[in-house]
Length: 190
Image (tube, rainbow, N blue to C red; front, side, top):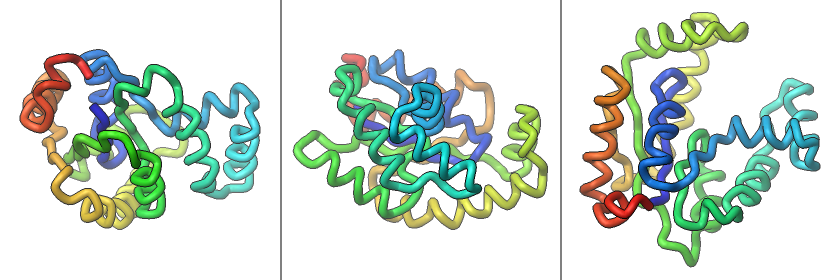
């Protein structure tokens, strides 16, 4: 299966993608992990990403897309993938659509939702130094503003899932909803 995971910070995207990945037998690909790996390996794209971050800027789309293209070419991603943190804007969504031309395309977009106060509580529990209630509320507002066009872009592929409750129950909801999208792939573990 080829899936996108959307949701605000603290919704559980990484947790749920991590649980679903072995179930489907496809890699969980997080753009944050790609950035860290490329920077740690001192790749040319990693150096460009680090330069942008050190200058207080966002990593340019072309750098993110280059890292993702390299990762999607790996053998383990040929049967499918779970993308977490990409796309973040309509230009990246267009790029991904073009990248997937000639493939089966995306099966679904899993949208994890949760109330703002719970998202802030979860994020604050992680204890990151840049996570204050004010900064989290600002990032959540930016997320809502930037994500709505993507949800419109993907339209019928979007599967909303309530991200409130025990992790395993949320996982079961995702599996059940995906079974109606692609039961063969889910049963086969792809």
